[in-house]
Image (cartoon, rainbow, N blue to C red; front, top):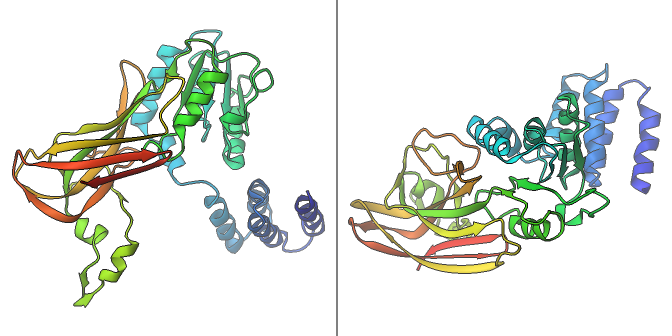
Amino acid sequence: MQIDQMISGFLTAIESGPNSARNVIGLAELALSKKEKLRAFELARKALRDPSCDSGVEIRARSLLGSLLPGYHTGMMNDARRNHAWDQALRRAIRPGMHVLEIGSGGGMLALMAARAGAEKVITCEKDPVAAQIAREICECNGYGDRIQVIHKASQDLVPGVDLERPADLLFCDIFADTLLAFDPLPALADARNRLLAPDAPVIPGGGAIRIALANWAACAVACRADQAAGFDISAFADLLRPSVHVSIGDPSMLLCSSEVDAFRFDFRLPSHPQAARAELSLRANRDGMVDGVVQWISLELDSETSLEARPEPGATFFSSPRFWPFLESVQMRSGDAAEIATEYLGARLTIRRS
């Protein structure tokens, strides 16, 4: 409260003076340094709209605003394949009079689809204050502000009878990272099933899987190895390499060397999920050649008719990315040879390695 009062006092003093836009963006940067994220957002937008805003202020404002949310939101909202699949699944599931609940508003795209599909009431919760505000504005400007309520809370903090006037008839969410687990969807889904939904209420997606396959990746030596470079020994840097790296879904140099298998499969309709599991898998090469590691991606089963999968394929486009888990050393394999792979998750952390 003291920080907010300080910001309000500064704003009153500077907004009517000369160079007000430059002073307001400075105040926005101060607010962000004090972890006042929503206030920084509001001030940066104010600076952009100020008549005295010049190119320097605009760059500072847009840099600040661009840092407030992860960049994947834009890709998600503009992904035609994702939008079509979700729109069709929601249209099949929603009936007139339904009250539906979404976990993770993002930019409000799925909430809008649910309202357009005929839901009487859409409750969508978002723990990030900036995303919640943007989603609220987008829903209102599209004419659904009266049917969509954006609540700035994590789903576990929703209170039945306060935030939801009655148990929801349907739950939907898309809070699945490239490893499926990184945003902790399992506890959120289980909590919602147990506290916030009507008995037997459907869930979209109904299930999901973490899939893996052996792979040869032309960029592996550059992205995943640290031994020799420019005639120097750089092996000490190997300790700093990450266990996995993002791969473009359409990278033509990513070659699958085995059939894919499910490392883990989840039924999101269940009232609870294991918070840890381990699986030993045998992946059998289906071609002769060098194998550099394991490529992993997610599959979401929206309903019995539609799935969304981030399987790597040359030229493919999708907002979600596969991840590549390199072996310590690449291995030459013949068709039919098997590689033993250990997979494990603990909470939100996934690990994949050669046994």
